[in-house]
Structures are given as C-alpha cells and as structure tokens.
Image (cartoon, rainbow, N blue to C red):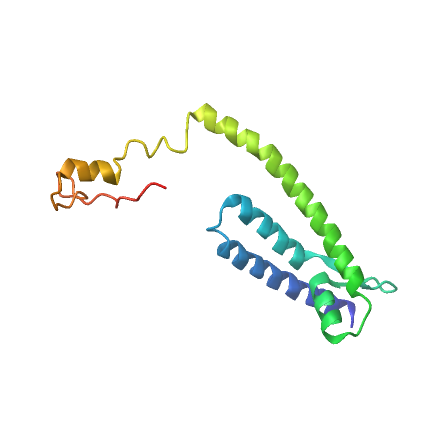
Length: 159
C-alpha cells in the first residue's frame, strides 16, 4: 500500500465516519440531554479512535475495525492493543464531557435564575383540561376554537 492509497483510505473512512456521526446525532436528537450526550461521545470515540497496526511503518487503522476483524477472523494479536486504545480514549472523552457538564450545569442554573424562568412558568397561564371541563359544565362544545373562529394549539396534558 502506497502513501497515497493509505491517505485515500483514511479520507474515505473519515467521510464515512462523519456521515455515521451525523446520522447518530439525528437519531439521538429526541433523547433526554443527559443521556443523549454520553451516547454521542461513545459513538464518536468508537468511530474516531485510531490504533497502530504496524509499528515499524507507523500505520494506523480504526480501532473498532481492528478489534472486529481480529476477533472475527482470529488472524492477529492487535485486538488487545485496539481495546486498550479504545478504553483510554473513552476515559479521556468521558472525563472531558463530565468536566464540561459540571461547568455547564451551574451556569445554566444561574442563567435561568437571571432571566427569571422556571420550567413551569410558561405553562401556568394555560388552563388544564380539568379547568376546561369545569367551565363547560358537561357541554360537548369544542373549546379549541376561540371567539374569532381561529383554531388554537391543541391542549396537551400536563405530566
């Protein structure tokens, strides 16, 4: 394998890994933030961690691919090195994320307190379903239409 082939293969892998990361970010966009972010860090480390394959020529390969191929075909002894690299990079990435989250948490609380926001303050002015049913006194009218005939947003139940 020439140097150009090696760089071309890494370029193709980098584009594919970034595409997989984008898909993963999209798939995890609906999850609660404190679960979504560690999952994103995990997948980023799995996809972007290199490990050395040939120390004499300083050739690297993706650690997850080296581990999978060594375990699947039982052809090399690079699996333990790749797992060690994965665990080291995973430890570093999660440590950085924990520091970032620990610093971000008080700043967000301070920012919310400064703006005077509370999570339920925006919802408090909307009537509950129980309030709407009490106002109707059992009538079967559509309360989602206001006096102008415009439709309002649908009423969501509070959890």
